[in-house]
Length: 322
Image 1: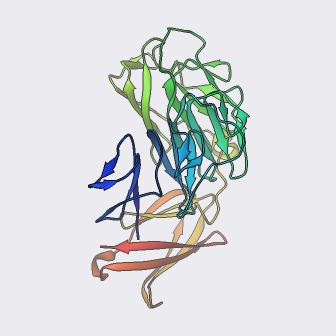
Image 2 (image 1 turned 90 degrees about the vertical axis):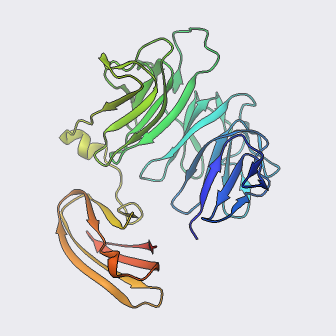
């Protein structure tokens, strides 16, 4: 069953009592074991289906968690141990393609680790990202910090919000973390009353952002902007994500998207739940991201399994045909 999750500040979902978080299975809403005692502001799902939630809450299902919690399908728990500051919030979550979780917001401690408004979780411990995100120029704003996060396939994590410094680098509301150091994206946005509220990257690692902005990089870009990714040899290989059987292959909208670190022969077959092969194909693909359409027109509605191999790795993914 495919589940969708929704978080926010609400007490009911589809007429059902739900404390700030709920699940939708395509036809019915359900709550997640008591939910949160306060607002949920961000959600992210890992490769194993665990749901991470961030916000202003300090309990989840009655469990003390402090701004961030993990739902494993049966119970809530806190990632890590130790104190998380009682004020502030986790306002943004994202996973990079190596499965590392990044949390951003307005905080100075998370899971017992001192961190300035951003940190990463590797499944066992929290880590800081250099000197973190700060507001050096104080305009007496009540709300500031990290509001948006996005990760590309090259190992970069993009951070947006209302701030002017990342790791001591002047950044003006948007910055990039490459795994070891912070950098600015050109001249960024304006320095006063500007903020990035949301962002995303496309398959070519171009960054799109929106929010309270009138210009970006010195160009007029009312409310939305695009930052073009520069492909260089050093960046392409030094910062590329580790390609594994977990992240090489994805299936969305009846298309296979495969990320190859080098040219390889792709072989894949599609079988039904009884193991009967309904389709197979072999294709020589070049390095990089490639998308292949799946001819599902002749398939009966239902669930299928894609069994694929390329570059010495074997991958299996579910295909749902409606």
